Image 1 (cartoon, rainbow, N blue to C red):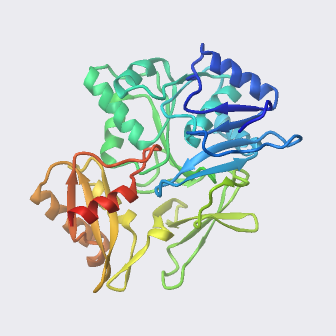
Image 2: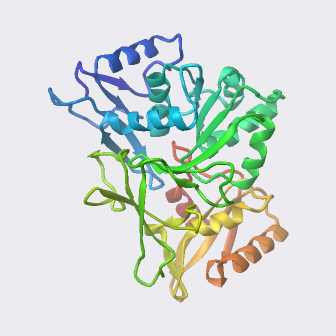
Image 3: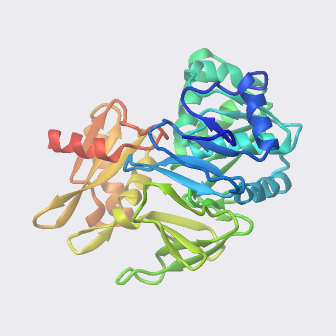
Length: 391
């Protein structure tokens, strides 16, 4: 799978901590210009040819659950390491905390940024949230998904830990940060500035938020990024497909593919739709491949999720489109928590008032937890199968 010029990180590798042997090996590999192959399994054979420049590989698993191995040149990430050093004052005096496995691009990115800047690193993959909550005590910078942050806060609450005042930056990506979690984070990390960013394994950073970002926005474009929003037929001028040009884009898929990923010259689309407000703040409405018609109206399930997640009694949710012989599709919403008729009425009313009748869920199902992919995103295939069984 990998030759002697490749450093391989897999589920069987040593967990990297500042004192673990695995960290020294990774640092040595970076100094020698070796390729880095980070995967969640060894099932994808990858061949690195002699004479190749240094490459980074990471396995991406989207909401479909199908793994893809992407190939990017290290300079595409190193450029953003320098941006973050300047924009967010990240340097060798920091201690990074990473909660996820290095086969996920977010965790690999944070790990390599810490090493590039000379910062200390605490890699906490595989530990239970309560243990992560305890081990994160010395960290000043945290990279995590919303799901990881939610579990971390629950672990801190369960163990009765006092507020962690050393943490000064939280970078959150890989999913929607709901309003309730945003309120809880300052209770645990009172001195931390929260930066929610939008991006993907293929694009790296696209936009990033700050304290002045309006509710519901994923912020303004990240330094060096140019956006081109191209309207779809019948969608109007405000909402468009997001095309990205930047020095942070990946090169190609080494294995696997995605119909959503399209190139137009040096511009890249991953199939996301959105719009910009007059202040240049980007708002996402959903993926092009999830947009459906309900009674001849275009509906994005992600917009339904956004409205439902605003309710204080909703800790997590997912919306899915189900084929309907009369209306084209109808929406089913899955909410974490016990059945509550009053809540269901409130959610349907909010969707109707904010999005219109076509976006109102016909059915609302209540679960104890959502099935998740390894990256912490809802497993849409599992949810569709569950809906078929229950409805």
